[in-house]
Length: 455
Ligand SMILES: C[S@@+](CC[C@H](N)C(=O)[O-])C[C@H]1O[C@@H](n2cnc3c(N)ncnc32)[C@H](O)[C@@H]1O
Image 1 (cartoon, rainbow, N blue to C red):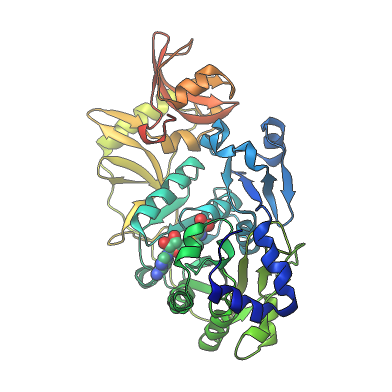
Image 2 (image 1 turned 90 degrees about the vertical axis):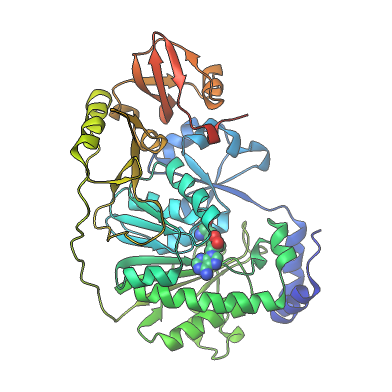
C-alpha cells in the first residue's frame, strides 16, 4: 500500500464520510492502463485487426482501450508509428467532453506531455488548428515530439505563459482546454512524486495558479465557445471552489450539463462556499467508482463577450530558392505535394496552419508541419513529414512487417539490405509510416532520428 500523507487521508475522511473506506481501498487495487487509437492514422477497426494486444473498450472514449500491464505497448513498433498514445483512462474523458469539431480553432493551454492535445488533434481530423502550449521548456519539447509522432499537421507548439498568449489571441478560439497544474491527488497510485510533493499549502498554491490560468483562458475564448477545465486532484479548493470563483468573476460563463458516461459522478456543491447547485453539473471520476484514476472536469460556455476581428496575417515570403529545393524533392518523391503557407525557422521549412495569427515575439517550439531542412542545394525531408504521410502519398515505399528483423534493425538505426528504388523511401510497418530511408543500390541508409532509436 502506498504511504499517503496524514493530512490528505484526514481531509478525505472528513469529505467522504461513509464512502471513505471504499475510496481508500482503491489504493490497494491495481490501477488500469489505457491506450488511445490515433484515428488520424488508422481507424479503430483496422487497428483492432492488426494489434497483438487484448483490448477492452473504455466507456467514455470511443478510441480508448484498456490493455494489460504485461502487454507493454510502449515497446511495440506501432507505438513509434504513432498508431496510439498511451494515456491514463480517466484522462481521456477531457477530449471526449471538449468535443472539438473539424475546422475549429482549439487551444490546449497546459498541454505537455500531450495526451489531451493528441486526442484533440485526432478529433479535428486535420481541419482547423490546434495551439498546444506548455510553459515548461523541457516539457514543451516532449510535447512537440508527441505531436510529431502522431503525425499531426495542423498544430503549433508554443512555450509561453497563459498571460502572454492572452495578449495575442483575444476572443480567438472556439474551444479551450485548461488541464491545470494541480496537487495531483488523483495520481497517487500512478505517480510517487505527486505523493511526495503533496501538502495542504501546495493545494492552496495550486488553486491560486489555476485562477490565473482560467482568467487568461476566458479572454482567449470567443463568445459561444467552450472552456473545459480539468484537474487530476480531489481537493475542492482546486475543483468546485475554483469553478465557483471563476463563475462569480466571469458572469459571461455558465456551467454546462455533460453526457453522464458510466462511472461518472457529479461535482459536489456541498464542498463549495456558495453551494451553487449548478456545480453538480461538473464531473468527478473516482478510482473506487470506475477503472481509472481521479479526475475533475467542468465544461463552461461563454455566452457573451467580444469576438476578435481576424486580421489577415502578412508573413514574410519564403525565398523562392528554398522552395525550389523543396519542390524538387516533393515532385520527385511524393504523389501529393504538401502546399500551404510556408515559413522558415533557421534552415527548417514549415507549413503554418491556416488562420494562424502572427507568432512573432512568442516562444515557438513547432510552428506547424515540419517539412524538412534546407541543406546546400538540396532538401532533406523531416521525420515529422514521414509520420504525417500515408504510404499512398509517397512514390517509393518500403513495407516491413512489425515482427520482422528488418523493423528492429530500422528502429535501432541500422542500414538494411533490401530491394527498393534508389533515393528517398518511406519506411512503413504493417502499412503505416515510420520514417525515411535513403537507398543506394539495394542498401537503405537509415534516417530514423538518433534520439528515437531503440537501444
Ligand atoms: C496536468 S499537466 C498537463 C497534462 C496534459 N494536458 C496531458 O494531457 O498530457 C499540467 C501542465 O501545466 C503546466 N503548468 C505549470 N504551471 C503552469 C502555469 N502557470 N501556466 C500554464 N501551465 C502551467 C505544467 O508544466 C504541466 O505540464
